[in-house]
Amino acid sequence: MNVFAVSLLLFAAASEGRLTPLTVYAGNWLFTPAPKAGTPPTSDHLTNHCHMDDAFYTCEQVVNGKPVAILIFVAGSKRGSFHTQAVQPDGSATGLGDLTIDGNHWTFSGRDETGKPGFRVENFFKDRNHIHFEQYKSGPTGAWVKTGEGDEVRLP
Image (cartoon, rainbow, N blue to C red; front, side, top):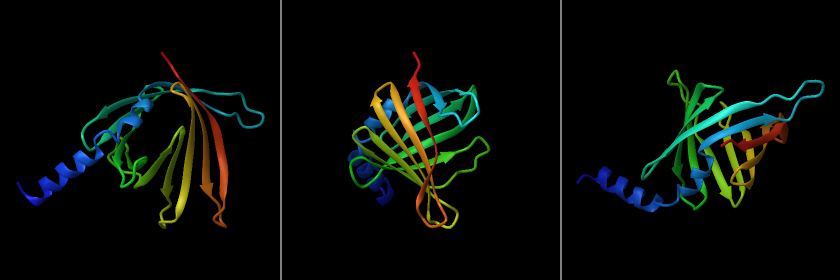
């Protein structure tokens, strides 16, 4: 067995069970952003077709019947930390991101084209079937600016 194969086996053993918290995200969700002033509320149907292997957790995300991305999760060096990558239907990738899970609080973060912190999405799981989310981008001074929020409810 070569060094790469041994490294992969050790990584898979180390991440075993660490991907399990991600399974809560699978399934069908009604995604409702808070309406902007003067606009009626809208909702989208989000489906996460997810699959767990030894070293990867993947979810094909489908919004209103249209595939929009495959999300790839890999366990990080600490429990509750993950690296993420989204691949779009045209094969392009959005760039490496991170996910930190601390109890019912999930924080997705990513960098802009210069490598500086660019965005974050915070998910607050009220329970397995209800998520409140808040979206932020990094402003010109580096302070976080809220750009949106809303709720997701699991559908049967």
